[in-house]
Image 1: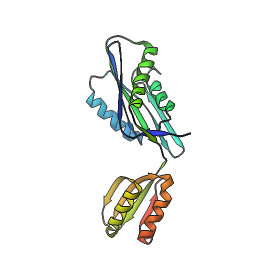
Image 2: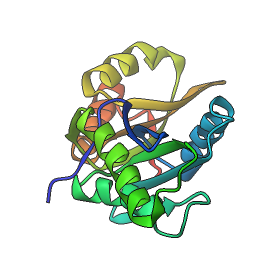
Image 3: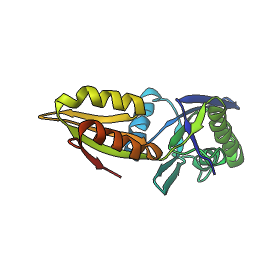
Image 4: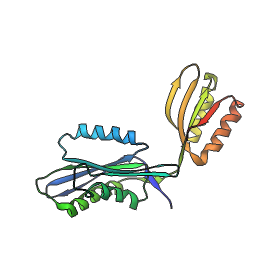
Length: 201
């Protein structure tokens, strides 16, 4: 079954009985990444009554799913958001739904509908792209190979996660599993095997 991810962040909304629900969807690669986004949203929305969310993160064959009701009745917020991700076969993404309470209680069925609808709206407004399994590589090389490496990275659309410039250059990057072997072979060929490559996962 094909799986998808978001090409870029997207938003959605829903309003019911003066309560407004604002959805925010974006790519997420780790729980730490998600926690940092949540802190930012809490700072930006201090008057929000709830910030509920759900995510699906895939790493190799492992799929981590999580849903938070953030103080709403059990199962009324996080699960409806998670179900939107599941229905659309979306992985490595998170959807937050920020609620501003309007004074009238909606009841559990009303909350399930409101959170689910806001989350679905953010996906309807999003551009989805096929999800490809990623592999992380740690590459260490002398400065004389910097030009060659920049050319190879650009050609293969590898995403640099971290760079360290010491006695040699060390980069941690992410690349599609399907492209990894060809990528490694091209580096070895152009550097005559003098560049160190370590697979991180």
